[in-house]
Length: 375
Image (cartoon, one colour):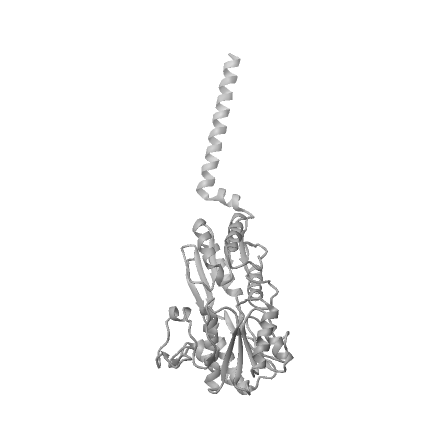
């Protein structure tokens, strides 16, 4: 009899234990507490790949400053150490794949040449958000981002046009792609808005980051009579060449005055930090949607670097007045009439190109001395 009672008690105890376990699980699932416990302490991993070294003082440096801003301003993330000098070829595809395998859920690919690699890797990993800088291919989990850097380029052209004495301005250009061509055109329009006699002479390096080659290109322009050097390059080499020759320069990407304090007048600069913080926060909040972002000066993503001491108050006033029109949206850089450098009208009076036309621009405006080679 005793054995039967003991067996019955044992069975009852087991039943109570099982029911309690089931009930506890149902309570957690209903309240969501189980998911919270599992994710407690976990952070979303964010990664960046750069086309050059973070210390280039130019393009990659500006993105790296944005990365640091992101880390300081958005909680709940873990930023993977950035991968620098990633080639714009098939190697980038493997680099992106490795970042996904290492648990990164948001990946910023910060150069145009990564576009096809991003497209391929993103298609295999729909749960990862990819942001590609300066490209045009999008998907549900791929967005593009850029800034209307042509706006401050135009303004820097005003400074150059008012500064030149020889009326020859040199431009050290990277690759013959629409982004670079558009910048040369905007700069030239700014130059000629205040100095119709000036021309902008272009030399191509077909590099983003090659300090020696970029500096040599600037030297070649100086020997041709240029007394102001502008650039679409990632190093201060062209500015240093201008300083060594006792001439002036318009830098790019970041404030380069420390590298050539007697030469740098000003230059278009990037401010990526607020965009990175806003975008990552949107992903964390579940509100992010793919888009093609092309921010204007009014958003603060692009601007002019501080002026050098040699820039007069008169020039600053001219720039400030035009900047106000751009920021207010009452005028933009490529408002017609605009002719190309063969004399053909490209934009009629009062008209503006579409964004698509701007993004595909492969012709030079009147005043540019140069041609666009095939890559």
